[in-house]
Length: 449
Image (tube, rainbow, N blue to C red; front, side):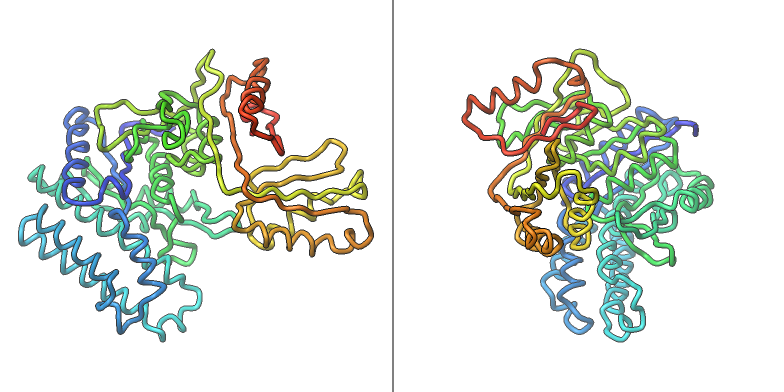
């Protein structure tokens, strides 16, 4: 166990949208810094709101000749110029804009067709998409140094020098051994008490820039929390915490003050967008708690996610995923035949189709799966092709797809062994004349979907 002499703060793109946001974020950081001066404060930041999409558009739409004329470059240039002119001294602002200009020149080189041809193993889009974090982290470090009137207390760190990942079918997997070695080289020798670190970006096994994918900045913050052995990870976002339901659909939804890691992962998987399930994995072994708080309402305590379980609190949240299609595979020829499910899921995997819910009759007469509606036609065709012989032989009677469905999930650790929870759930749906087409419940009884 590492000593827990630091806290990790993570700020997302909505928290870093403009000048006022940077001022607000800096106040939060310094208020905490002055309150706990003995703690090292590690700040992980996303790009300015909207920048990652603009950079991806540049990677997809622009070339070396038209980049400077593109609306995407003009939007980025305008916002960054206005931001540094508002926040920084003239000389420092000029230095940053020179750095920005050099980065744009680097992007131009990346967009050069000859360079792309000579670097077939370089994912140009991933490299370009990561510049937004470099800019936001650099500006924030310069601004906080100005507020503290000290360059020694604040240090900018490029996470690509620390986090190393390997590619896999499940996405980027952290190379913990190499990342920990680089962490010791880069961070432990730093004397600064406030470290501003880029989220989202990392390096791959070939020492090339890459990124951790969507929601990658939260994941970066969790990785750093694990590397530091932090006291806590505080994710500052634009909502008050994890909600008991979607407030856009349930007006009286409440902030859930305490959740276990498992409850948070279940809620996140089934539609709660405050935190990604992947973010929690690096924290669980060291039992590092996560706090979800609102940058725009910093007085509110928010939600705490930890290893703790609350007694007598059986349901934590109800979540929903809309635009779902159910695909039902049915036939007497499936009964007792090994490999049917394996064949089904391998066929879907080969087309990179994710299954959200699975329900199988105990007789093995039918398997029902839920997929995103927009891929349901492809999924149905894939399954029909995989089971063409069985369909022709009559071993499988039908493969049906039903669109326009929604998944509702009730989540809570203490639902385990509680009689009447499922009955109340389905009774309520019945009273509302809502038809249930498929049911899934994990053996942990933590989730009824």
